[in-house]
Length: 326
Ligand SMILES: [Zn+2]
Image 1: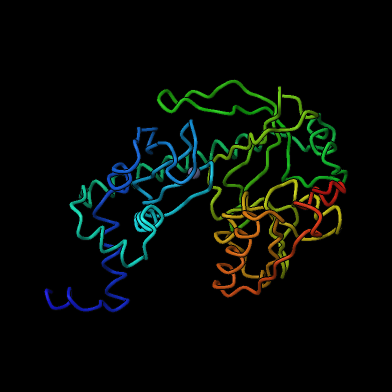
Image 2: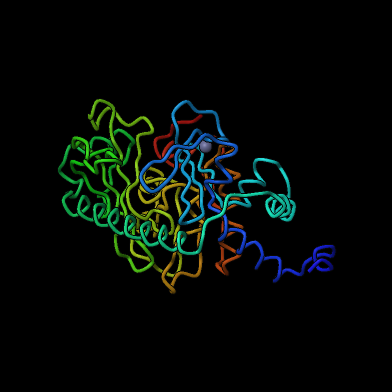
C-alpha cells in the first residue's frame, strides 16, 4: 500500500480509487466548503462559483454526485469541481481530495438518497408528460406569434406545443404556481418517449413580445432531445428550438434535433440507426468553443461528426434566417 502510494498508480487502479472517493464523500460536503449551500428539496442550492450572479442557479445533487449551474451550464462531479476551482489537473485534484479530511457518508445513506432521488425524477417526468399531453399543437394558437416574430413560418412539428403551465413549484409544499402561457417543447429519450419538457415563457405573458431568457426545463433533459423530425442515419443538432426551426425552414426535411443547449449535445442518446451527426454551431466565442467541445465528445462516441456554421455575418441560424446581421 505504502509502496503503491509513492509510485504512479496504473490507470485502472486510479479510476477505481476515484470512484471509491466519489462514493464515500457526498459532493455537497466538498462544494459546501467553497460555496454557501442551502437545502432545496433533494438538492443543495447556492450562488454559482463559476459565474457572477445575485440569485442562486447552482445546484448540487448528492445522490447523482453532480453539480449543475442553470446560469452558465457549469456541470461536473467532485473531481471536476476541484479542477475548475483550483485550475489543476485531474490527478492533482484527486490527490488533493484523497489527502483531505472530507465529510463521509455510509453506503446505506447513499443508497437511500439515490432511491429517493430516482423517485423524485420519475415524479418530475410524470409532471412533464402531463403538461405536454395537455398542451396543443402551436398551429392555430397565439403561440404562433412567438415564432412569426422570429421569421419562422413553416408548419411546426407536433413536438413543439402551446399551453398553460406553471413556471415554478414550491419545493417545500409541492404546490405549483399559477399557470401561464408557454411554448412547450417535448424532450424525448433514446426510444422517443417524452421524459421532459422545456417551457418558453413570454414577456408580460404575450407571445408576440418574445421572451427574455425565460426558458425552464422540467423532467429529464440530459440525454434527451426535442426531435423536430424523426431520426434517420444523420441528425443535425441545434442549440435551441428557434435555431432548429430556422434550419428546417432553410432546408425542408432536415432531421433537426434540439438537446436544449450546446453543453447538452454530448449526452444525447441516439437510436442505433444514427451514424452521422452535424453540430450546428453559433458564431460567438462561447458558441464556437461549446460546439467544438460537443463535436469532440460526440466523435469519441464513435459517431461521424461535422460542424456547420451560419454565414460569418450572422450570430446564429435564426439571425441568418431573418437576415439580421450582427
Ligand atoms: Zn454558473
